[in-house]
Image (cartoon, helix red, strand yellow):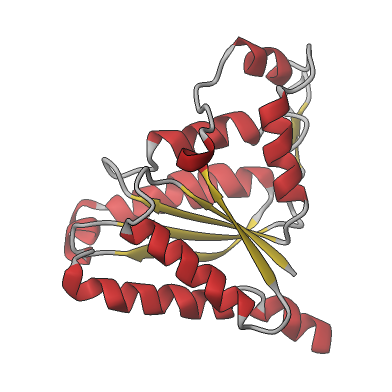
Length: 202
């Protein structure tokens, strides 16, 4: 099986990138599976939802070619993995814009003129890894952890029918905690397709 790991951070030497690579290494050691890392910053993905995107959302024009390329990458994958730093208690802007543009009407879901909705990503397993500097107590005390899961796990992926398998926050990111977070990411990678493997052998 194949995992597409989408990472959003401008610095390739960041902990975010290291965690993405560690997850990919875990996938590679888990028994014949493969992983591809999509580095949105290095690839220069343009996140701003524009007039062409709006016309495509309204099903008036075809999707822009850069959006089609991203959708094709997801279509080739059995799992989508998002690895990102938490900025202002949410996604970085580039990753949010990637979702805005790529998860389009007619591909991620079908919205009929009468408002009825068909979810189109039921086949897709999703793994979410957010990396934050604040401690877990801060997230729990202010409800940031639940707010993130509400807007991302439910608001985005449940809306499209995708199954969120992993939803992890690696918090208190520091020199002391980095090694543990990297090790956790590798373990998560080795387990990425465990559910599918269990179902196949049942």
